[in-house]
Amino acid sequence: MQLHLHPNTLELGQTHWQQYLDQASDPFNQYAFHAALEQSGSVGGKSGWQTMHLEITHQGDPVALIPSYIKTHSWGEYVFDFEWANAYQRYGLEYYPKLISAVPFTPCAGPRILLAPNANLDHALSFLQEQLPHLCAQLKLSSWHWLFAQQPDWQAAQQQTWHQRMGCQYHWYNKNYHEFADFTARLTSRKRKSINKERRVIAEQGIDFTWQRGSDIKPQALQKFYHCYQSTYLKRSRQGYLTYDFFAQLLIQMPDKLLLITASQGQNPLAYALFFVDDHTLYGRYWGCLEEVDYLHFETCYYQGIDYCIANNIPHFDAGAQGEHKLARGFIPQTTHSYHYLAETGFNDAIEQYCKAEAEQIDHYVLWAQTALPYKTKQ
Image (cartoon, rainbow, N blue to C red; front, side, top):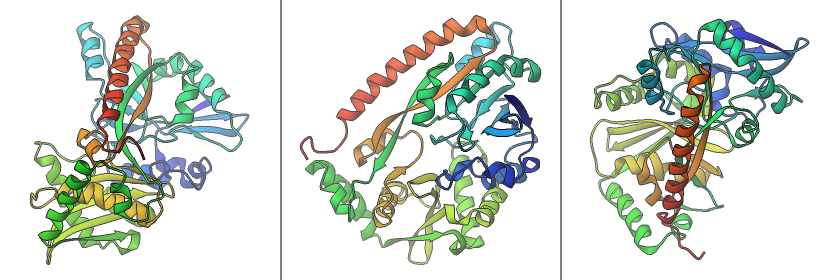
């Protein structure tokens, strides 16, 4: 097998990229998504993200494409390794640049190692493990990080010698509900009343919600959404990672994957949220509001998404990273998995202990979180 480096998504080309995808692949694997990141300046330049996709071939035939980026910082990844970087610094070593195989700014699990038809994942991962020392030496990288692997992939990754890190997110699952009340009927009385109250408070204020998909999303609405998106970051004295041009390009290149919801009171828009969708999952990704209203975030980002999944027979709702408050609203805790290789072998023992301790904490937390769910114990 051979390993090839591609420092430019656009030069790799859509036809070459898409040969690694099937029709069920999630929106974040699409060529259009990564090309929009590059063309819009959301990655590249001084962003701290430099495209460096990995491709494995065998006798000229495609085996795997691994969307990857060289990083000079750790922002926008959602698997936090700042402590690792500080440890390197204390020992006089450089942690950056590093290489991550992930979707920028997107903490969603998925098939981040894209296999050609009939390719073998175990063989591809074993070859990648053999190549990592040479790759890190060639590009002067401290490490490689594979973030948010999906379940079949992380099960295969456990056969390698990489460090495994775990995290926790909260996802909602559609149990063939016909309406929102079917979902809340599975909750305890107290939690059901609480959710109904939150929804009633919004409805009594005359706040309405409009969904637009793809080509129905007008540029003016997208601009208003982007203003809200930036305002969310400005409240934390930061700037949003993604440029307006990124979203505008997605609207042109992959409109069927985009959903925009607008919360309005009369003629006045109050909030916007942008979702991605495929046949199996609704992904809640970006939100912002023009006016603070009690429960508006929950309604816009959670309850409206649940309504959409029920109405469109979508089985899974990934409403975004973090947010323990999702538990009380029926989102189930589930672990995330990431894998890490360090070129500096002297850190391996310490990092392995760190990962094991972290995994124990996550396991304990998930067990507790399951007890905090609002579902009736007997269905």
